[in-house]
Length: 245
Image (cartoon, rainbow, N blue to C red):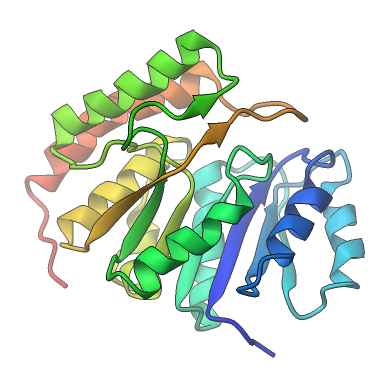
């Protein structure tokens, strides 16, 4: 039986080193968040660990298993639809590798539930550059990518590729999720841009992003390229699209 208004969606692929610890960290928070793991056929047994933990958290931990790597964007879309069907009011995105601190979840929740935001972003760049243990080249690439997105799209957000986000359910109900096309980090840009064009209120909450200590990063040049070149098409197509709520 659902006993919370909030669910945290965590996509996974080969996260056996992190998955139990991240689940326990979220479960220990006072708010009582539920968790939905979307696992893309991890060959390292990530899903098996989740299934074991489901015996401990039967009413709070859920798992959707998919065959093969289908992309970050499609994982979140599947999670959003799952959560909307179950009437959650606040739906979160979060990574499995502790780059997003679970202790910041209540701050994102407060921004939406109490302070009036429709979308709350855990932002690395709203108050300077708050990134730990990233190579300088990657920090600069990420920071200037967000600057580039702001320039092309006019999106008034400092951290456009952030993957630590809280959405009110009304936002995800309004956006036609089947029209979201990007699968990599450009997915994060497209979701924020679409919410902005619909007139939803977006807030940025400063967080400290800590590079993973365990497991392997899923970032690659093709994912970054999609984000760089996809925003031009995103902006162009928005000129001919109506955003009626």
